[in-house]
Figure 1: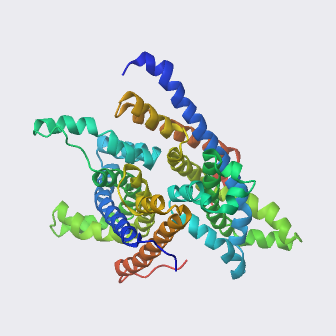
Figure 2 (figure 1 turned 90 degrees about the horizontal axis):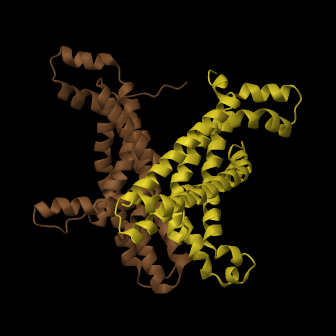
Figure 3 (figure 1 turned 135 degrees about the vertical axis):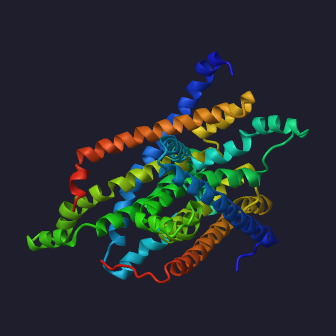
Length: 230
Length: 230
């Protein structure tokens, strides 16, 4: 390995890949969180029929591999004439939007389950207290349950973000040049069997450690630790 | 019923390959996990360091990258090793590489599960074993391990479900399991969505089967124990 070409030529490409990985993961976990909030609330409902509506969605997306879901969107949707004729086809034939859509749908299912668990573990006395003070169901959800659930679910959410970061490595299969895609392309170009995979591994490790730090900071800000000793 | 266009048998063969791959990985992975947990709970600081870095490094890097590394990055070393035995073409086949990579990941996660289980076994049990004159190995095999098994089983079941989905990644190194069988069928029929959906249904059925099996195993391992209702 020539270090000069590595630093001048290959490292910037690997860092570009890291940029794409971070972009995809950030958008997916934020969009996923927004979509998951109504779904998580529905999952925690006391009415069985409300609970069961998001269940099929969650069961499908948690029970099949992300790679398969990605291929269903990227290759699968072209099977339908109606999709190819519609306005959405401009986006759905682009691997970037396919990857983003699949990752968002995938992580939504996981985050919804995290939220359900968090909402259900809000102590019932606090909800009852809110209702006793005359708050409506919506008010107690907005001011008591959700802020409380956010703190309970935050550690699990940070795990999910890191899992998503690692899962995002499959997007290289639809020609996207994320960290993994760059590593594979450069390896093939330079006939290096190990080197660039190790660089990719180090990049992923560095991002994981960075994300862990960020979430620890948020947990500190939200004073999650103060609420643990219930 | 969906017309499989003659690809039924190859999908079935792919399913069998997925099952074999997941079982081989879990067998090797349990060994890695036990070794990792033994390292982490050891009194030796170096063993603790080894166990800790094993989990940190393996869990911080995507499964996809491990699969590709196990396949492509072992070539140089194995060719070199093989040249001593007169076989310079020595390399891992996709099944072996996939098993190694998935076992590595399963081991890293399961070592945490095992560690928790090992720590939850009262010290007195080990001391009682020593008092009646059992050797350390026999204490581990007859007293510690059966209890660890019971406590760790639910966690291991979840990890097995994750592993089952990760086997899809081995299709990237061209092992013909469910994912790759669906891809071959897709290329032959130009019906991508149909065949990926069938693959998804196979994964979902496997998940359900494993959940039923886990329920049975947990019941069997918990014989004679009553669960405390809080």
